[in-house]
Length: 606
Image (cartoon, rainbow, N blue to C red):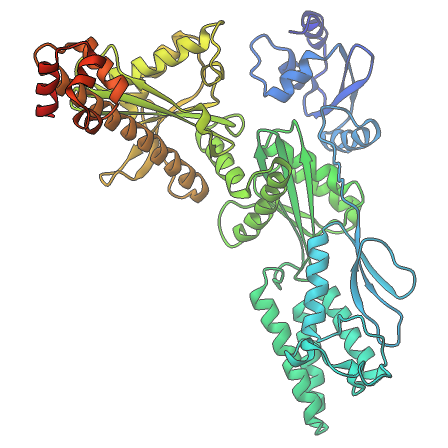
């Protein structure tokens, strides 16, 4: 709680209604957040109102605000420009700040007689250098593809070769991935021309390269240079094949950036896939520890990303609509000298590129967190589908199992970061429900579980931890049976049911009043299916064990002279029916404290 809230509210009540920029400061006078506003009074008031429903990041920032100042502007557009400039100048703690811990990468064309094309981590003196690129993967892939398409040598030989051993071609020549410069059949001028074509291919992509090569092929054919024409034909085929099999080409993406994000409990990653001249030329990923994965993130990111020296494309596609996209487009147009269109897509042809960027963001998070990209995407899809503030890190799921009104029990399975955490699993035998009633059983199990959680002396780690999300096997009836009681106990964890179809397969997620379809979200659907299968497996396994125990106990106590206590002694010592059957009457008599005649009768009926 901020002790300065009353002062801040009084100050804000006197604020102007004009547009402007506000600067939040901590007790040391340090600027911790900078924001813009169309109406300064309304915007700043929203931070300090009594019942403010802030995101965790904003709530944390407000707790540290000691004072603020502001700068009035004539228009909202001027406020946007000023905000961008001040953020770059002060780098406030609670604004998202682009931090890229990767170095730059380059494509180098050496200045040898027979130049090589290589991927480098630094600028190499001499020759030609293309770049910089921030993605090592894209850089290496581009170089590998250019060398392969134009059959350039990648070996360590020095050209021209003089020794007989050096002139012997390697495997790449025989599998038609190298033109065989070592054999001395390629002139320096012909080789230089091919390298120039490869460089143009890297710069412009497949479409321009094909057009140029086709013109050269037709000219060679007209001059009756059929061997050269055939070679160019094969090269055109290689370029076309690469364009068809790789996702890195699309003639429609002349000057386009694709921006998408993925979130995890640790933070959010934003990835930018860069297309120029129809070719994927770079990828950039940025991690933000406290950022909310929403439309404001996209607007803040776009402003910072393109104001830090990155090339501004003509088209920017985002996964979610960015706030103030129209004004940001105007600002980027002013800076770049050309029109910039910011559009968002959640369906249609562009979604495959959005998914490419999102998958890159997920993989970045997976490497950082030691998890798979699929697990991160599943939890992110789940959080958005259910309206959770962030992806659930710790999930508990409950299932009831019984045989009529006997052997009634429940399972509690736990998934952490999208994976089963078996050491936290719990099993419950139903104690307070006499006849079959799944709603009452679920109520009892959740009550017992959270009474243990609220007990300050509880030592079991599985009960001490509060889940981020609870799933129940069943529909709205199960949810309505437990959710009100959990709220009375002060447990605010979201509760949902997992609904099965008539073939016992996952169909939907149930709230207290409606169902939410999940089949279109593949990763989330797979995770839910895994959770449901696991809680059913644990519940049915425990139910079978209880039923076996009850049956065993009933057979023992059916013999006159053996009551529950003596039956318990026998079960504890022998554990199985076969063990008792293979024992002597004297041994059974000694263990249970019964007569040898009674022991013999017991062995006989078993």
